[in-house]
Amino acid sequence: MRNFDQNSITQAVLERVAGAPDARTRQISEALVRHLHDFIREIRPTQAEWERGIAFLTQTGQMCTGTRQEFILLSDTLGVSMLVDAITHDHQHAVTESTVLGPFYVDEAPEVARGSDISGDLPGEPMYVSGSIAAADGAPLSGAIVDVWHSDEDGYYDVQHSHDGSELVARARFRTDAHGRFDFWSIKPAAYPIPHDGPVGKMLEAQGRHPWRPAHVHFMIEAPGYEKLVTHVFVAGDQYLDSDAVFGVKDSLIRDFEMHPAGAAPDGRILDRPWCQLTYDFQLNPASGAASRAV
Amino acid sequence: MRNFDQNSITQAVLERVAGAPDARTRQISEALVRHLHDFIREIRPTQAEWERGIAFLTQTGQMCTGTRQEFILLSDTLGVSMLVDAITHDHQHAVTESTVLGPFYVDEAPEVARGSDISGDLPGEPMYVSGSIAAADGAPLSGAIVDVWHSDEDGYYDVQHSHDGSELVARARFRTDAHGRFDFWSIKPAAYPIPHDGPVGKMLEAQGRHPWRPAHVHFMIEAPGYEKLVTHVFVAGDQYLDSDAVFGVKDSLIRDFEMHPAGAAPDGRILDRPWCQLTYDFQLNPASGAASRAV
Image (cartoon, rainbow over all chains, first blue to last red):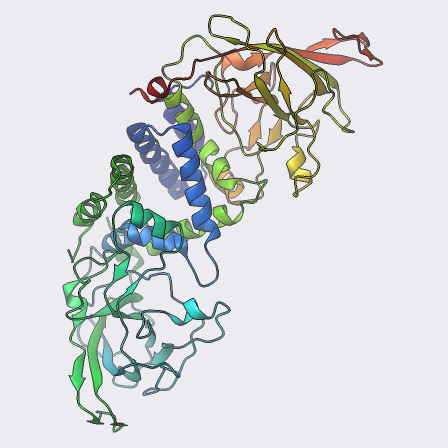
């Protein structure tokens, strides 16, 4: 195979990847080649533009560290993460909706006792979060793992401050009780710009877009026999709910973070200043390899 | 904009990038979103497959150094580099054809005198290369820069041995004389596998493909008023001419590397062993911003 023109090159690459031993690898490779070549044929890049594309991808990879995932930011801001989410959950019944994982998840958040305050020494408005984990039929799921993370009052995550991951804060894991319940204290998160000091930030600027996300608390919930749920709960009234930089907002995930005056909270804690309350009851899909891949 | 399904998310992202101030940025962004989303909708990745895709791109970026460009390897092995080449040169007249740049180009190769031996202390079969640079009408181009690089007899480039770039060998720049001519000595290059100890090597293996390229000498030729030519000359008879891992072979770029017995070479050098000779006369297109972007 030699002497390719701008159409025969595609056929040549397709013939080459057709030998992939694994059928799924073959399928993904063939689709990638077709769509990627169609994209290139449509935009007709100059050599200089091709070089800029190579440099952009290289810089995006080199921006990644243990606590900064620039390719997830790219996937998020191009709507790919939410598209994958929509495809994965298009069979979903009336359970809690999912949204993007985002780039700030940390695998090793500590498990702490119910009712703990996970805000460390962070300043901010006290926030009491409580809720339950249940199956689609409402049956409570005890022993479910509720992984929680959110920004501080300035919109930053712990990992954006300490790059060695040694100072995890506003981040923890809880285990639900016999009634499927969990609760904890923290501080109210703020809207924030996604990290925009890297290649993705430059892309957003070139596209005339702002990098802001509406304030939210992340939840990742796991229970044996159920599909893992990755989602947020958004703060009602946030000015960025309709222009989230990563397209992650769903109406069912918005809640009032209800304000209360100083005084006693539901768990008996006495607050010397106003505090807010978030309540959310989550429902999980049964795990099903077949269902999660149904077309 | 909220609550996207797997079709409306594409429209939402398109509306967001429609505000790009620069028209070309807008055009590329819109095409990228459409083709990327079509690809994702076709393959319907699981969350785990999406994570593997993110990891693949991240590792590809992190494999890049000053002397290793894994994203160029990815572009080359997916046929994108040769597709861009075909698009860029589809207006070409009867001048020398181009092919991929490849990942081993070094910007700061030294300029040396005509007739120099650039092989350093490398073992191998002596190779005498000579040729000319001319315009499409045959007019010789004096003072053209001929940038040359090639592998050693084991198929490795200098930069694969010394990662600080301090030992450039089998690599140099020449300037053509008043008749547009250049010549130099080196050693005959060998076929070689592209670097396959990284993510791209894993991809090729998963696709059931070999990583080999037929033996060749790289040329990058620049002359004021002419289009820069990036090309190779391939060794006739190489077993990989029809299965080049990067799809770069064109018949017009294949030459016999003619063997000669020990004795006097054309430049008067006396060889005590057999040597080979490559002769190639290059012709350049006139520079034309308009022509190079014509659709």
